[in-house]
Length: 407
Image (cartoon, rainbow, N blue to C red; front, top):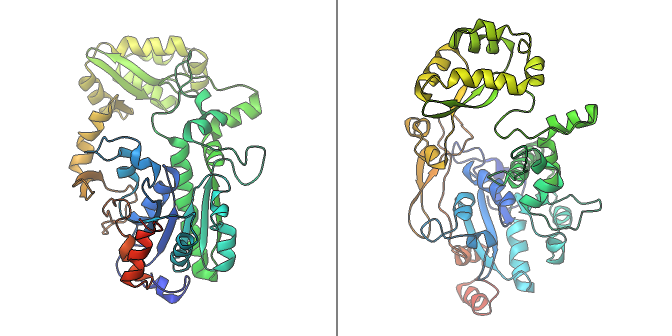
């Protein structure tokens, strides 16, 4: 989009992509905000990423796994434009503010107070530009005793009690992917879309706030209600389910298979139809889920005695035929090679500064529309082009670059 936020030009879509014509400027780093803006880019928004000169988003340097590029950065930053600015300089902030003045959305997940110190406080920007959606991700929110504490994914997982729910009975563990970051990023993207819909009705933008702490706390709903109403901490069961039995990994002749029984009908189908053991299905210790949870070790042992008679493939076939849910205990290599992805044509190729890489189609499916999957930008790749778009003469652009204001 060009021109003033909220004008009719923002509603003139040039394609079937739902966010075509929407411009997002983001002062972002790490995972949470970049995930939100990447989803907006996949949906067709133009995303302009403000980065530090020299270093850029520090996620660029987490590792070198993708042919020299960082795996987190490649995952989270396709389809964006990068401008490198010295935001501690007056001229650098002025350029950022010019970009934001032309945008529909501003996103930031800087350290507490950092955006305000740079002159990019979302509340002030929203006041200056009433049609702007000014969105922030914080660690703990804008009030409370932890307001000013820096926050990273593992720290939020610990503070919310999430790690007390994951792992083995003997040892807590963090999740294998940054779920607190991902939760906050998803809620931010959803909130931005809602704010844009409201702006379409009212012409007003507004301020959007999402905290990693709140997003993660929301995801702990079931154990939280158990704690509040029974006083009990939900125990860790490894792969097992805290409230449903049998729902775990069980042995086979050649490995293990996950089985998930959701109700008492499913329990009887598993034992009577799949395994031919109606006597176990009708055992008074196991008839209802409440009974089975109370006798978890005995119930799981009874199931394991039956599953161990079959190969994983044979057991999966029998379970599928009976309508009992099951799954292979895959590793990440198994996901990459999964036939469910290949046969549904879920893989695409995106460009990066080190060459093309494979990437999965976004999970948001709009039937008949191929979502945008743009290139991963090099640091400052679009700096000159964006200065030209803002009306800076080439000589001025080169002076700003020479002075270290623009990278």
